Length: 594
Image (tube, rainbow, N blue to C red):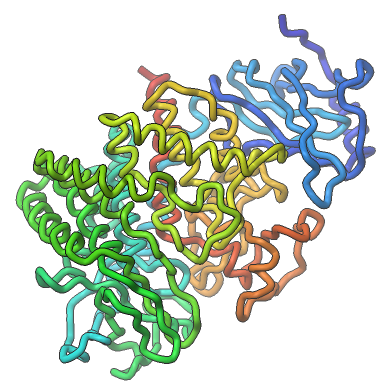
């Protein structure tokens, strides 16, 4: 039986001041009533935990009633530098809806909610950011940009030829555009809709302007990407991979004012790079491409799922997508290997070097469109070549080396083949093994875009649990989710303005925000990186004092600072990847309402 105790708020204030150097991290979005619930406490000095004299000091307090209940348990974990001691505080038994805080060792946590409505509407936030990232007509900025895109480069005899590739999304806070990340964003949003269609609102039209059009906004956004992808595949044997390059970085302002001259006039055409099976780059820096399958396979899977979902909404559009998917599959299968993005004046590019995951998903989606069992055979063959996404359990990776960060082809096959259920389970276990006994139960490698890896882990864990009913990974699933909403060393929520009253990035690396003064709600920032990565990147620095200095360590850093593009830059594909798990969490409110 729970033991309730009435606590004096004056006593809380007094003891909190005594132990001001200790910190409790909670999920600032909140917890569902039936969640596995845990918080993390960081202590500057070691203190006794389990003695009878102080176990009563771990209390979960209802703000409205003043009543409190003892935590279910408290566990000592490996210390997280620079703190002397770290604890996990468990309280899953607290299920009554309300506003709470934790009192532990004389320290107060931020307030948090327990409610099945905790994530209601949160799934719409990523779409706000996606609309702001639109290239061409931008409904958030009420302006148009890059109307002259573009001219082919590194295209042999077709160099300099004009192609119409206006549209799509800017990749991040610069204005480059990549097929790789855009196709994944399209797939992620369509997948999120397919898995929980009931949670998506219709408040905007196809252009992204306010006003319902009878189609869920997530499908409007995915279609915006699909229509651009069709332009990026203008001919059966021509697949385009990238618009613009790092010369773009000469301009830092809102996109409509982009004045970079790529050789065809100020603010005129930008270069358009075709997919290439061989290494390329305009200047001394070259990528290490080996084939077309990674990029063209992404064309296929996004076209295929789009043809299925839009079949009842726009049959003609769906038919075109199915036709393009079939052609893309043929081309991709004939050209195995990875197609990387193009570096230019700087040595940075997306270093994707796996591709069988893209072909596995493409084949699985082609089967869903055609019912041809030969595609399932292909999917299984490709899937067996990479049973586990290689970053899972790894300490490091090159930039986007293993991309996408989740192999949804495994999930597509798992419902018919237990081998792929096992593959999903093995990947999760490898990340968990790497986490060991750290306080945050985090086994993610802190490479560039570590938050994207975290979202991938959450997604795979949720899909595995829902597919199998196996809850063995539930603590690590919720710990990764909670990490994104403040249960991390910095107490930082990693999605801008989510929650509105949370500690979210206030100085993100975004010219739209910094120069244009526009809010960028919903964007997932890159997240913490190894200190060694931060120290090695060109042109990186802080423009303000680091308010998280006390929480940095020799291994991992995060800065809420405009000039730290390694940890505080929102990305379009990372943001799109949050739509599934936020949609699934939002569905709890829908279930409760029924």
